[in-house]
Length: 184
Image (cartoon, rainbow, N blue to C red; front, side, top):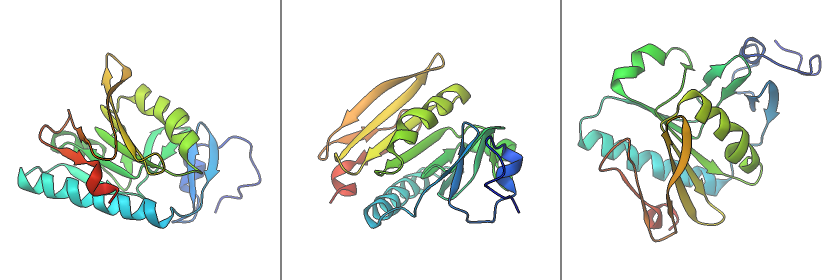
C-alpha cells in the first residue's frame, strides 16, 4: 500500500498501489482527493448513463460505455476517473484492460464545486493532448452543457446549450442530450 505522505510527485505505478476505491485521481503527478459526488451529481450521472445506453442499444452499438469510478491511464502522471466515458467498438479491445489504457473517444465530466478547476483546466488539457475526440462538460450549477470537439489536436467549443436545449454529439450522430431531462 502507498504511503501518500512520502512523496511530492506520484506516478501511475504509485497510484495503482492505492487501496481500491481510494478517493483519488492522479492529475499532473499530484494525487488529488475528492469527496463522493453530491446527490444531484449522482442523479445527473445516472440520467446521462441511461440516455446514452438507450441510444447505443437502439443502434446496436457495441462500444464500451462506463461511469465512474473507472481508471483511465493517459500517461505516467495522469490517471483520471471521468464521470462517463465511451470507447468505440473498433478501439475497445486495444485499450480496455483492468483499466482503460489510453484516450477514450468521448468523456463526460459533471462539474461539482470541488472538481470544476480540474475538469475545466488540467484534465481538459490532458484529454486534448491525448486525443479524446469529444469532451462534454455538464455544469449542474449553471444548468448548461458544453461540447468540445477535437480538431487538428485542439479543442473547439462546438456547442453550448442551456437548460431547455440539446447537445448533439458529433462522435455518435443521433445522440441528442436533452438538458431539460437532465436538469428536471
